[in-house]
Length: 413
Image (cartoon, rainbow, N blue to C red):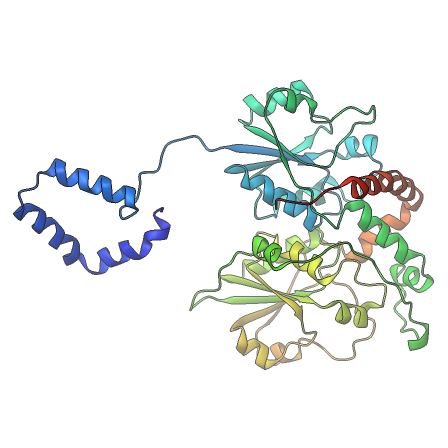
């Protein structure tokens, strides 16, 4: 047992010092020497009654690199697994130039990808402009400059354009560890979902800024297929597992949080600074579709919930939060402040203000959004480079298909 697991013992000693005093008096009456009593405390320490001294052993530092373009819960879960293999996680963020040379144009800029990766609860440090291939020269930098113990990557192969293993040098050095790939999502998959939405004329008009409400019968019936199979265990792995304190100031912010991006991270960071506990409401798929059109959301409810939970500024989420915030909801969650950013997706069909109640209670705050990026603007980038992404996806789709055809029983986290 460690100190934390025996905190109730130490609280008892603090609140009832006569207990420890009684032990000491008894020891004195029995004529026990200090050294003997000291030996007894050592024995008790082994039993977990007294805390063990923390060793001065150097913390294990692990490294994982990636493009982290169109950041999703699969990326987050990979980094969570990597962090579990050490004490400190250092992430290498591949440069825009390297991505362009090896995979095609990135959707998100280096700055946006840095915001996303830095905002994850498992990341301790980020190295920008990391190379796509880990050469022996860069490996030596990792070992001697950054004190990295192990290089981590998923069990799906990562090949360079010439067909060689991108992690061959790390494997040769015996400093490579492998994690399980997260099933059901990839950046390629997400780009495919977006492009499938763009095939619909109304969806393209919405992306171009058209906000006229279509007739009910003309609404597109677009369905985004997802391979994701949500489990309670995965949600627990992403969750902080802690509720607010009795006097905590609870801040609430809601939204779709579709295609989780740098704008989301920045507004969540700003909201968290207003209180002690940040509660985030994630709207259901049905709610998002009813407000934005049937081609939304791109990511499904549980996928969006995991992306938000992975953010280090978030304490808890409501999975399937209501569109309108009621007095009962505010009371139930003991909400002190309701916030909303100045940059947000337009609701095409809502005729009532969802923040009417918190505004009437004087607890609503409009926050200046640090970034103007939105889910729509990300999708528009895909539109602008449509041909390039079609080619990239066609190439990646083959390796994705091969992975699923050859995969065996999935174990691990």
